[in-house]
Length: 548
Image (cartoon, rainbow, N blue to C red; front, side, top):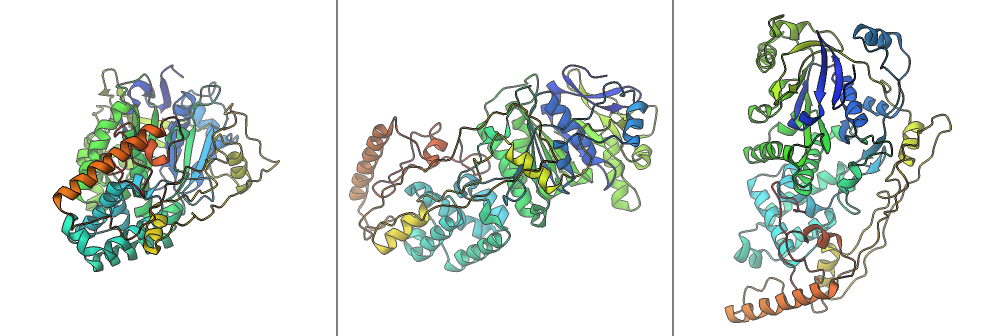
């Protein structure tokens, strides 16, 4: 029943497949709690992995981690395999898995910098109003103009304090900045820190190449984000996944329609992305969903109700798996009606009625086939997973983490000189040394659980401290001098531009800072000499993050 170029999902009146060439056309997995959405996700993720496609998915309940371990022999699984004619091909094995965790407890730490997150997504994360978002944009603009690196939350706090202390000069050039508004943003930053957000911002920042690895035998890595604790702060969860999508959109090259996706992204609890989202953000999400297909990335939204996804996004989702929905209330009846109407009808049964009658592990399936035409909907028994149903123990998880190809790369946090240190030195009138770094974690393995050698190889990439920018000695010269004559300002800016170009030429062959590497393909350079010249403005992408 296995066919080349396809992922077997289950059997209706015929085998149901996800065609790899059309897997980047996005999809939707819906159904009420307990109907089998997680198992379907696990089956699809492991099938894509076996086909050489890296996968990212969030483990909201903790039981998706079982994909890393071989399944156990169970009567009901063997019966399901026999019922769908899959007994001969059914085998028990784990998938190559990499665990990630924003808090660094159940996986490798995931970090980005404040600059890479950008003002739009950060405003969404902090739940700022329009006025507060405008002030945050000014903070980013000044940091970009002056070459101040915003790496972690203390950098952003220092930048906001700078705005408050220089409100008159800033307001004359960039727009009004009220101290009360700055104070409101600072309070929201405090809330974010209490929720654990300070773990997410810093260096080393995530390299997306580490989420797109393939094993020696050609299987794609399944990247599992531990999200059980993260779900306690749903806005942080949704914004993080949206940031990750925007990074993929901005970094990956155009590939058109490849024979199989470069990455498939499962967005579990997708309603959190769209709840109370402003129209401007929804427009950006729709744009990313439409265009990221040509980057070879497939997005699959997983949620309970198809009404959770806006129509403009729903229209982009060609591959559909619908588990059972109940129709006890008017809203539930509307949801069933919407779900039924999105399928290509099958004259053999009433789609509306079938959705309310589906059993556990049964779903209505319609996948794109041929020339991207949806198949006729089929009432499908989903195949049993090859990996474990249920979570890993703590010892098993630690063993998988220690055998990971990125073990040791992200565990140690680096705190280099950035906006906080520069602004502090400027205020004190002297250069300060950056504080010594960091934290580290250790992993233990359990002799009772063996992780297969997937041929990852050892990772030679380790974080290295970047060169430190020179801090200006004279704190009395203002960075925002509103009182220069136009002629003096023009001369100063021309001189600073010449110095920036000279520094750029002299830096060739040396090690680049993270900020310079991030924007080199878009602009000539961002000056690393923060004290002696003004960096060029950073270029930001569709969701406000740094355009790589």
